[in-house]
Amino acid sequence: MKTAHFIKQVFTVAVGFFVSLLFLLLITIWGVSQLASNDSSKHEVRVNSILQLNMQGRAVELVHESLLGSNKGIIDLNLIKKAIHKAKDDSRIKAIYLELSYFDAGWAALEEIREALLSFKKQGKTIVAYGDSYSQKSYYLASVADEIVLNPSGLLEFQGLSVTIDFYTKLFENICIKPIIFRIGAYKSAIEPLCLNKMSEESRKQTGDYLSLLHEHFLKNIGLERNIKVSKLKEFAHNLSVVLPTDALYNKMITKIAYEEESKKSLVQQFNESDATVNKYFVSYKHYTHLNQQPDVANNIAVVVAEGQIINGVSSAGYVGASDFVRTIERVKKDPDIKAVVLRIDSPGGSVLASDIMCQAIEELKEVKPVVASMSNVVASGGYYIAAPCHYIVAQPTTITGSIGIFGILFDTTKLMQKIGIECDVVKTSPSADFLNPRTTCSQEESKFFYKILQSHYETFLQKVSKGRGLSMNKVKSLASGKVYAGTVAKQNGLVDELGGMEKAIEKAASLANLTGTYRIGCFPYPKTKLEQLLEYTSSNIKMELLSSLAEEHQILNHLQAIRKRQGWQAILPYTIDIK
Image (cartoon, rainbow, N blue to C red; front, side, top):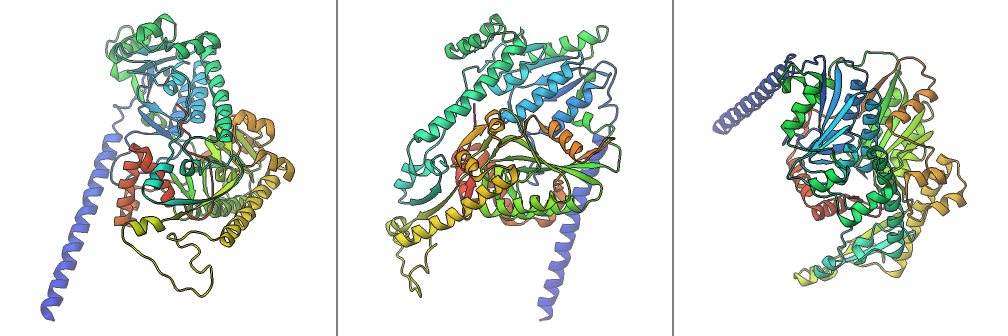
């Protein structure tokens, strides 16, 4: 017993020593990084400085700190916009340098960055864009620039927009799994990838409708900035006639063919002819936005971000957890300094139960403070569910919204179990005691009961929209059935109040709260620090983060991960929309 006690003490001391060592290491790393970041000479804003927007990565509304790695490849959308708006009124900043080689974002996010750049340009300041190559999304931003530079070996991918959907019906047939599908609404096609091999006519029609609207908007705005007719741009895309650098230059889609260092040097010399030093004039947007933070004032507007699929429980990268969301709303509601709230949504929807819980929290919040919804790239189904109760809704013309509908899926794995040698037997006290057992199919009575539940949730969804938007039930029903709309159409049919971005939503929130003086904008929820993540980390968290990293690289894993997280009835967009 004494030996066991001694070993236990030694083990306890050893564990304590290694934990203390780990914390000391983390504190040392943090201290060194702080000293490095506080090197003022490195980030000095000089006269005739150039704001450098290194846009290599994917833009997101909310950056989640990653314990297992850096956030390389993740761009904070709000930080980008903040830097541009700040630079617009800073006399020391003469130009913006856009590095757009490997940039990706949703179309509504692109619209907001583009609007900020145009506002900067209206002050008589210069914008130069450079790309090793340009995707259509990155070129949409580059089109506002005074000079568009393309690498001699690069390409301009200007070929029209498309939506591609993967179908898994054959996959499930091959592995002997039968999806049992329940849905309401002919346009609620979230389940189509699981039961069809191509789009239904309803899905194809609505996809074509909003894709055409987005394409026309895209071409019109590019045409205005480059002084090229829309018909000519369509011809370029149809014939792939501006893909090569020389063709793009000839057709005035770009202004220069050059390497990056040459384009940087040329820009610096525009404002500093006598100084050959290039790098000292470039200011990183990340450091620039942290200089001279907003002053403390009594009146604040909270921007609450809901980004990703809606699920029960806690939030993580790509998912909005209802319990975390409700805690954030409660915090905002109780803060006396917060006078109004902007709900920033970028979500295709998800769990009906989680959406309803979040909707209820918003309804309670709006009783005490003005709430304005700001729609980003996709605000559909469950995403629209939580937007509906807000006092006012603002969306971009390119926002994808609507999809008011609901579905449920069960997976019958009976044949798979039999094929691999697993048999199942059951003893029941009532006919439907094993109703939700995934290894069994549904009886006719059970299917009817499923649809009864589904209809009940759908009616609740319609009522929430009717009440929140002040529309009759008949009007809501005509807009529902899973139909998807671009922001411009949603404005026409009453699902949206005004077209615009986050700034317009903030202005409206301030107006509703009667804020006439200076007010501060705070973003919620606060991202967890690496130390906070370390304290609550478990092996399951590590496995999920590794799976998320893999899912980002492989689309099929992303779909399977999303299916795994879906519990109960779903109010979610038909499929993952990635317009390229």
